[in-house]
Length: 172
Image 1 (cartoon, rainbow, N blue to C red):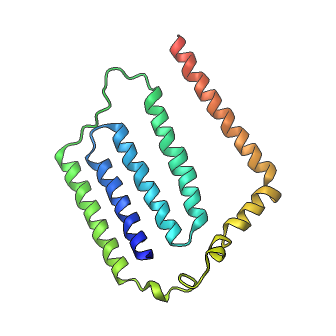
Image 2: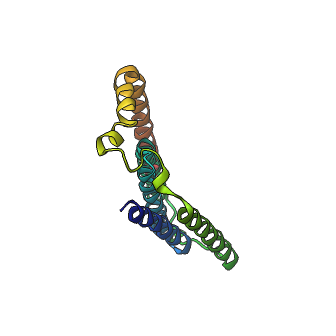
């Protein structure tokens, strides 16, 4: 069953890559990046790197991609339509690189012996859930609570200031 999820998340990564590669619309290309990053976080969950998967979703999917979409939406470019121009050499080289990476990863997955990994098939769901999230959660909400709240307020302030700057430019 784990192999099935591994293949599905791998295909999700490749599908997002192909969408990004062959899309001429910027928003569709960003959606391809989003799909790829979600697939990578799924692969991290399979590898029992649960904290890394959550950070991947929160930082890259929830932060970077949304920031790029937000930047595209508030930009005042009326001369362009959002199309990306790529020549055939760029597409061919990107397709060759992506195909080579896919072939390399497929060979690596097929030669892996997942049964020999310790704690992979023998751990219960509760043991897997308690692996890293519990310790990090306790640390964030006890020892580092003030720093965590200050970082949140700083990010909120930066977001509000950026939104007010865009409104000021539109009024002028």
